[in-house]
Length: 163
Ligand code: SF4
Image 1 (tube, rainbow, N blue to C red):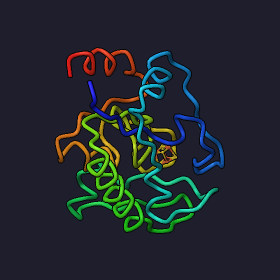
Image 2 (image 1 turned 180 degrees about the vertical axis):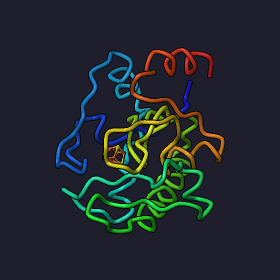
Image 3 (image 1 turned 90 degrees about the vertical axis):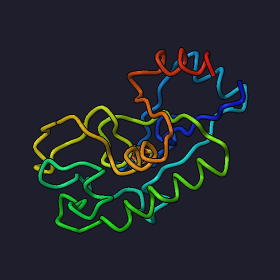
Image 4 (image 1 turned 60 degrees about the vertical axis):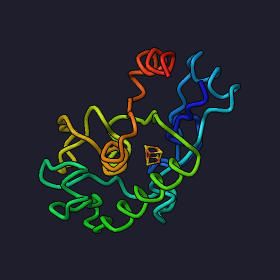
């Protein structure tokens, strides 16, 4: 029952998103995990050196976080900037931070080019979604950390109940 949970900072309401806002999620399980001292908070993009606000970014050409980690795809800003290095650095920081704190699970905001796990956007900046992981989610999964999205809090709670 001591498994810790890495959690997207914006999910706790921290104003770290590209648009300068948070995306707080109210859920009794999150309150319980916080009270139990199980939450380990990080924003991978800030950890990688990005600032707030910043231009929205997507993984190019319908590729995924695994493709970025393998050097097959870039993360680009809507303004054209290549932010691949910062996103990969942020993912590495997030994994190190998770391992340092003994996180076995992660709860990450879906849709983000870093934190997405159910879907991400396809690089067209046209609102087109496809199934796939962001860069941080992909690296955590490669390291064996169980990743769930903000739509799967109950599922994560059930999983943790058995660990
Ligand atoms: Fe939230 Fe993750 Fe984006 Fe940071 S990188 S703002 S934690 S979704």
